[in-house]
Every structure is written in C-alpha cells, then in structure tokens.
Length: 174
Ligand code: 5GP
Image 1 (tube, rainbow, N blue to C red):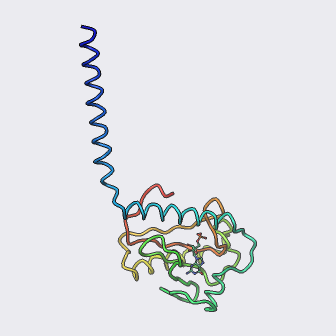
Image 2: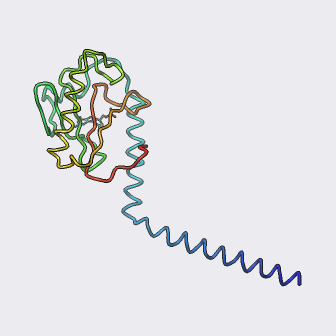
Image 3: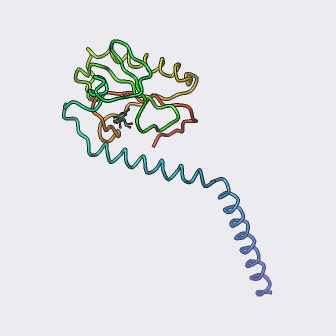
C-alpha cells in the first residue's frame, strides 16, 4: 500500500515536471532571435548612457549642443525658431528620437536649475515638442523625457527634452 501511494506521488511529480518543462519550452518561443538581439543591444545602450551620465558633471562649461546651435557641427534639424532648436538624437532610442533645446541656455544646465524667469522658455520647449511630434507623425502617441542629473541619466548639461515615439512605449521606464 505504502509503495503504491509513493508511486502515485512520483507519477504526479513527474507529470507536473513535464507540464512545467512544456510551458517553459512554449513560452521561450515568444523570444525570437531578433528580439533577443534587440533586448541585448538595448541593455548595452542603457549601460553606455549610464556610464556617460556618471562621467559627465554640471560644470557650466559649454557643451556639444553649443556647437550644434552654432552649426559648427552638423545635426539633422527637425524644427527651429528664434528660441528653440530641435534635432535628431545621434543615438536614437526609438524610431523617432528628437532633442528639443533652448538656444540660450541661460543657466538651464538642468531642469533642476529652473527659476521663475525660465517659465516662458520652458513653455516654448514643451510647445516645440508638440510641433516636433506633429512633424514626425507621432502626435497621437509619444513621450517627452527630461533626464535630470547623474541619477536621472543626464549626460549633456544643456537642458533638453527627448521626444520619443514610433513604437509602443513601456511603463515603468528603466
Ligand atoms: P541625456 O543623456 O543628457 O539626457 O541626453 C543627451 C543626448 O544627447 C543623448 O541621447 C545623446 O545620444 C545625444 N547626443 C550627444 N551628443 C550628440 C551629438 O553630437 N549630436 C546629436 N544629435 N545628439 C547627441
């Protein structure tokens, strides 16, 4: 009798193990090779961005964006007016990835440095982000991001808004 009930237990455990193995095998089919490569490269990009943010600091020195504003180095401009410049990110994290910056930094190395005198330009940057989204055909679904400081993953100390879209965004962000 004891032998019979332990045999039943063994059989039950075996069939449970088979079910788990089948489920793991079928779930693993949802990851195609392309998805795995994309996932590995996005993890690598996140680490590069983190490393760049840790290496940078808010010294108030001119940044690469000053050269882009002065058109000393080329950029792919999406929108420009008197106060704002919007250009494609050199290392896009989405099919659409545009940076929107104030032409005059005026102390805005980070959003954390914003003062009442900046309210107007902050509004202009948000409005320009919406114009960029329209121009890029993503106005019905997009994300605007401002990284602030090293822990916020900021690597360039000239305030900028990232306008991202063209793919399904995830939440929470990394
Ligand atoms: P942050 O990490 O500070 O929020 O974002 C800085 C962004 O500037 C990054 O996404 C980075 O790819 C972008 N970037 C850095 N240097 C250049 C450049 O020379 N040209 C362009 N178009 N983007 C740049």
